[in-house]
Structures are given as structure tokens and as C-alpha cells.
Amino acid sequence: MTSSSPLADLSAWLRERRGALGLRQDEVARRTALHGGEAGTVTQPYLSRLERGVRPLDALTPARQDALRRALEISAGEWVARTGLPLLSRESSDDALTALELFRVPVRALATAGLPLTEDSSSVIDIELVPAREHRPGMLVLEVQGDSMTEPGGGGIRPGDRVYVDPGDLDLREGRVYVLHVTGLGLTVKRLRRYGDHVWLTSDNPDHPPVRPEEATIVGRVYFHQPRGTRL
Image (tube, rainbow, N blue to C red; front, side):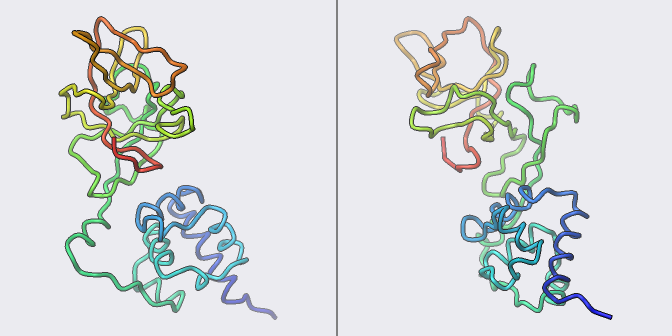
């Protein structure tokens, strides 16, 4: 009679834990980035190797071990008991504690018809874990479809990126990025420009011409965007 190795047992435990949470490997990877930043990110390919027993848990840096534990919602006691690995020591400052607090915010597609202010759960495509430092009351998280705000070099807001929108920030300011509902265009994300007495909605992609709408409803200002984490 043969018994499984400790490495195989830990690999199976990780797979089972992820399955119990109903998460894909890429979703766990995204969670590690939110919990640990760049230093704590465990990529999807690396997580796959951990779950297959190709790589041991102790090959991860302490920061990545800690981010993975938090991403899989494993208690400190269970982690130590199962893995035998020490916990990452953290400073007890308020800033460090605040950085660990996450808010679950529904994600909706930017191209969805109508204003994204409904509580209709059918319009939700995912859940974003928003760090406390980026959370604002009533905020919206929208997933961008289309390349109108993608810069020529590939930067800017790209298809599939997520934008954080503050519906309480409705003051139009030169050069800022807003989500608006424009007749004929539906929901759109544009940069505001003033030329003379007129307000234009411009794209960062030069292939998309500016628009001067007769009427538009401001949904809110884009103040943050994922995955690049660039302030706007």
C-alpha cells in the first residue's frame, strides 16, 4: 500500500480549496495581485504548476505565500497546520491594515444598453475585489469593450480593461475621462475637451473622431483603471 506524498497532498488541497470557492485559476491570480500587489502576485501558469505538484509551495516568496493564502480565504491557523510554512509578518500600521481590506463590487459591461445604475443581477458579468484605498461609496466598475480609448502605442484603456467610476463626481473638467450615455452611441467612455464655447468628447485613439453631442447624461468620472492601475 502506497501513500501520497506531502507535495501531492498540498497540491490537491489547493485545487479543492479553489474549487470550493468556485474560482478559476486566473481569478485566484487576480486576487493575489489585489492582496499582495506586484510582489505578491501568483500568475495563473505558476498556480497551475502548484496545483499539479510540479512546484512546491515553499518555492514561493513569503509575500506570494501570504497573498495566495488570502486569495483562497484560508485562515492563518489552517495554513500553518497544512503547510508548515510561517506566516508573513506585517507591520501593524493603519495603512497596512487598510490596504488589506477589500470591497466586492459588481462588474458590468460598458457596452450594456442603458445606464449601469440598476440593481439587476443579470447585468453583472463578474465581481471586482476593490482595495479600500480605491473604494468610493456608490462606485461602479465597468469592463471596457472597444478600442476608442486605446493609445497608438497600445497604452491607455484597452478592450477588457476595467474602469472605476465615481458617480458622485459629475463636474466636467478639461482633460478628464468620463463615462457618459450619449444618444446614438449608448454608454461610452471619453475624454472631455473644450474648444471655444463647445464641449467635445474625444478618444485617445486617433482613428475615432471627436463627438460634439447635442445631449448626454454623465454617469461619472473615471478615476482608476485595472489592470494597469493608472490614475486618470
